[in-house]
Image (cartoon, rainbow, N blue to C red; front, side, top):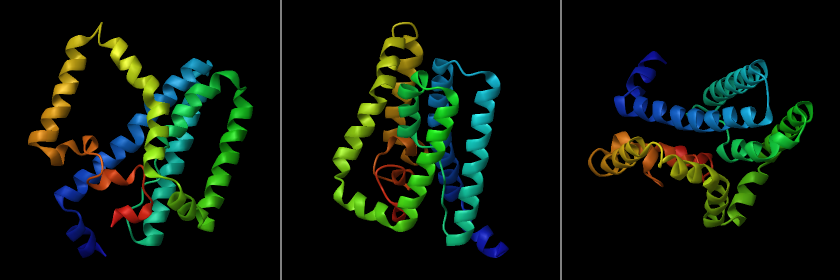
Length: 194
């Protein structure tokens, strides 16, 4: 086992793991913090929320990886977090927690039953991408609005993104749609981790 682990721990593999972790955790994390602030949640409620989802995602990813002998990341859902940002301010916190648990149970049942693969075969990838774009458009609009006050920062980030795509694409995996291990985040099924 240790020889296999040592062989599989190539620098490119570790880089892909770190990037998948950063993209899968940091993006939704920032959206969830914003959702908690807009809903007026206390620091304790936010800390409890982040702790529960982080430990749950880590335990699920570890168990699934050991069970299926393939890397599985149980990351936060970016569209789900963005949907929380839109809906959480109008819903009492206990009801939101109950809805979150019910949605998790339904998603688990759909995934375990095999229905997810059949639904995704019927669902056009372009439509899924458009739905995600529609949910995330609000955040892009905020970046454009912030560009007036922090133009240097926004231009530096945009320049680094395009430079990275051109001259060091392996290190700019988050910016490369449809390629690398991060392409499995959306829209794709678990088979993309081949």
